[in-house]
Amino acid sequence: MWSARAERVGAGLVCRWLLLAAWPLHLAFGALVAATAALAAVTEQTGIADAVAALAVQYILGLCCSFGLHELGHLVVLSRAEGVTAITLERTLWRLSVSAHGRISGRDAVLAALAGPGTCVAVGAALLLLAPQSHLHLWYLAHAVFLVPVFGDGRAVLSVILSRRAARGVAQRKRG
Image (cartoon, rainbow, N blue to C red; front, side, top):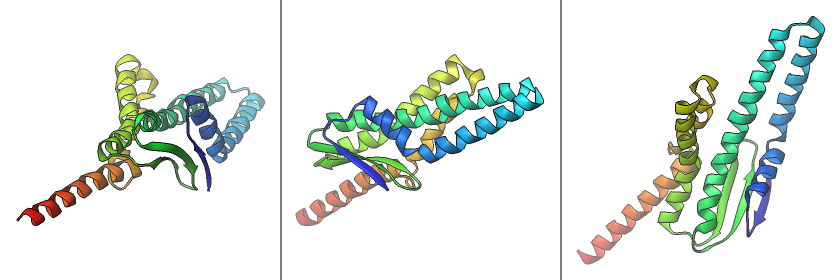
């Protein structure tokens, strides 16, 4: 596990964090590209080189940029939320995440959770309209799945909804 805590988090820090946090994936992809490019050079197959270039575009502009944008969406909302004193960027074996420290309102927690996937879905919709042949929109639209409660963003939204519902129930029992 790796984490960094900062009082101010900007786009540059997030990009460096994602680059460092996902190094095993970058290393594996780089090795695959190098091996395939070597094969293309040895066999003089330009089609292989073209396919590798297309795959690299999907990897960089689709996978990497979509996750960077996702986390930046969270960060923009969290950096403007009242009561947030610091933000932690964390990488575990299976996930990258952003968490706020301090007091965050339920409204800001929901907005922060929705901002990551929401930003990606908006960009995906724009890419679908402007450049559907690139297929990059699929990477961004796929971020809608993170709103399912099994994932962190969906779980955060559900948690706020359930806690508000429980608080309303307690208030009604006290009155009644």
